[in-house]
Image (tube, rainbow, N blue to C red; front, side, top):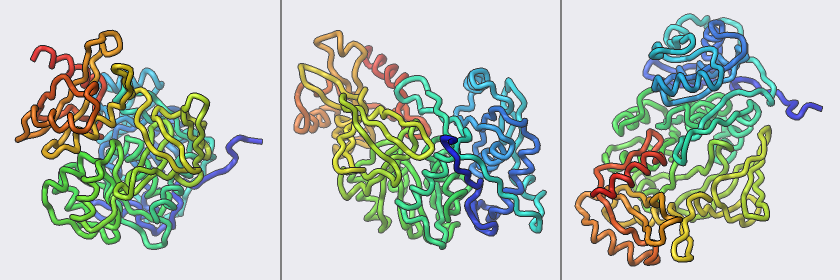
Length: 451
C-alpha cells in the first residue's frame, strides 16, 4: 500500500469562487487556474522552481503553475544575488519565477505578469482543475535564520491541503459565505503561505493581493474588501497599525504569529477594533500547530488532526497527516490531550548561578514595562565559560531612562538574570517577519562592549 494514497485538487473551490482580489478586481477560481496553466506551459517539466515573486497573486500563480508542470517550488523572500545563486546551486533549480529579471541569475528567469496571464484566459473555457497525490513534494520552505543558517524543509501536497482544512475548522472558515482576508506577511514565509495563499485555494476565503506593509496600505486593503474581514499580521505590524490611529472597517478576527504577542497589546487591539485577537503557534518544519485567543490565557490548543507526544527527555514531537513526525525546537508543557503551555525555545534556556531562565520569558517581562516599545535580552557568547558573564538588554524606549527600566526589571526577575546594562537603541534589527536574526544580535552584543 502507498503511504500517501489520497489525491487532492489544486483548488478546492467552485469555479466562480473569488480566490484573490486586487485593485483591478476579483480573480475567480476558473480564471486563476486558466492563468496558472498558461504559465505552466513556460516552465520546465519537473525539477525545482525558485519562486521569488513579491506580489501575492504572482506568487500564487507561480506556485500553482509549478504544481501543474510537475515542479516543486522553493520559497525564498531573500532575493539578494548571493542568496539566489546559493539556493540555485544547492537545490538544482531549473528556473526562477519573478516579476522582473533576477540580477545575474544562475538559471533562466520566467517573468510572471498576472495581468497578461489573466487577460489571455477565456471566461467560457474548460474548467481544468488537476488533482495531485498527497505524497507529491509541493514546496521547500526555509526557516527564518533567527537561530542560525536558514534550514530547508520539504512540504508534501497532502500536508498543505490537510492543514488548510484544520485552520478552517479552528477559525470558522468553513461556511459558504466567503471571508475577506488581508495578510501583511510575505507568502514565502510558512505562516504567510498557509494563511494568505493556501486558504484561498482550499477554503471559502478571498485573499487580498496588493500593498500591505504600511498602516495606511493595510487600512485601504481592508476597506476595499467586503465583510466579514480577517486580518493576518505580526505583533510588530499590529503595534504599528494601532499606533497609527487609523479608523478600520469592522474586523471579524485578527490573527498574529511569527513572534510572541503580549497580552496587553492583544487587549488593546480588541478594545480598539471591537474584535478578537488569536495567535498561531507554529514552526517552519511543522507548519501551524496550535492557536489561542491571547487574552483568554496562556494555554494553546493544537489544530484538529495533530498529535503531540513527549519523549523521556521532554522533547515534544508533532505528528500530522501526510507529514513526517517532527521534533520541535520549542519546549512545551503538555497538559490535557491537544493542550499545552509554551515554555520557549529549548536552546533559549540559559543557566546562571545554578538557576535556569528562558531568554524569551525575560524578554516578555522587558517589553511589558511601560514605555518600552521593543526589546530583547541577549546572552553573551562566553556565558557558559565565563563565571562573571551577565546578560544584556537592548531596548527601544524613547523617553525612558535605562536606570528606570533596570529598576522595573529588578522588581520582576531574579537578580542573577538582571542585565549588566540596559542599552537604548533606535530600533532592533528585525527582519520583514519581525524576527531577530542570531547573527545580527551577536553583532549588536559585540558592539555594546565598546560602548
